[in-house]
Image 1 (spheres, helix red, strand yellow):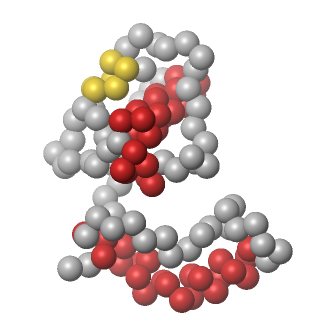
Image 2: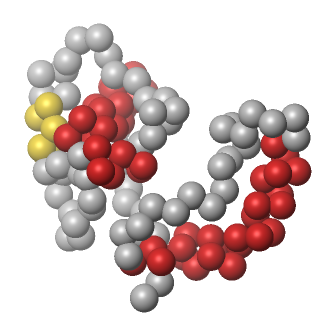
Length: 116
């Protein structure tokens, strides 16, 4: 069974923004070369979901931040999808709406309803 289907969290590359060494670029390239045989099949297995909107940027950012916040609070076991250093923002005031999310696929950590 491919690793991405096991549900295991395996960090293979730290990422340049998290690498606090003197040479994060070289470290990143070396890590990529070591792990690309595992990373490329993983990326090819991902499904990307789009939700077209026609709302203003501030509201869209609030909705995105609300989704991330709900995931972090309600599903800490899936928090790796939105780690603490992944910056998202919500408005200080809630919009007083319920965001309803539907999908043919189960998306781990994503609630069907989120108060925004």
